Amino acid sequence: MIDMTRKPLLFPLLGLVALIAHTAHAADPDDMVKYRRNVMSANGGLMGACNALIQNKVEFKGAVGNTVAGYARALETLNKDLPALFPKGGNGADSDAQPDVWSKRAEFEHRARDTQAKAAAFARAASGGDPRLAEKFKELSDSCKSCHKDFRK
Ligand code: HEC
Image 1 (cartoon, rainbow, N blue to C red):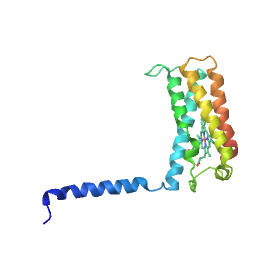
Image 2: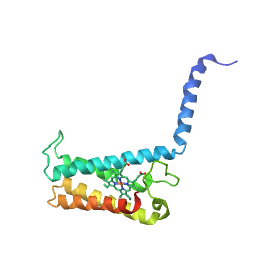
Image 3: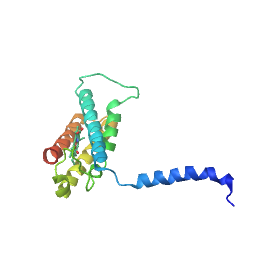
Image 4: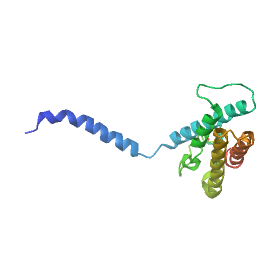
C-alpha cells in the first residue's frame, strides 16, 4: 500500500528535477546575445560615468566614498572573461558581432586579455589614488575601441 503521508513530497521534488533540467539546458543564442549586450552596455555606462568624473564634468561623491574606484572595480569584474560571452554557436540575428569573433578566435581572445589587464590596472589606480588615473582610463578606453574596430559591425 502507498504511504499517503509521503505523497506531498513528490510534487516539489518533480519541480526541483524540472528546474535542474532547465538550468542544464544550453543557453538560447538569442538570450546569450541579449545577455552580452547588457554586459557591454554596462561597460559603456560605467566608462561614460568614469569619464565625467575624471574630467571633472560633474562633482559627485556618492554615498560610499571613492565613486570612481567602485565603478572601476565593476569594470574589472565585467571584463574578466569577455570570450565567455561569445560561446560557439552564440551568435543570434540581433548581434553586431563579426563572424571573426569565432573564426579569428586567438586574436579575439588576445584583445579580450588586453582589456582585462587594462581594466585591472585602472581599478588599481582608482583605489590607490594613483595620479596616472586619467592615463589608465584612456588605456582601457583605447583597448575597448581596438576590439570594436575589428570585431564589431
Ligand atoms: C574582445 C572584444 C571586445 C572588447 C575588449 C570590448 N568589447 Fe564591447 N563589444 C564587442 C562586440 C563583438 C560587441 C557586439 C556584441 C553583439 O552585438 O553581439 C560589443 C558591443 C558593445 C556595446 C554595444 C552593446 C549593445 O547594446 O549592443 C557597447 C556599449 C560596448 N561594447 C562597450 C564596450 C566597452 C566600454 C568596452 C571596454 C571596457 C568594451 N566594449 C570591450 C567586443 C568587445
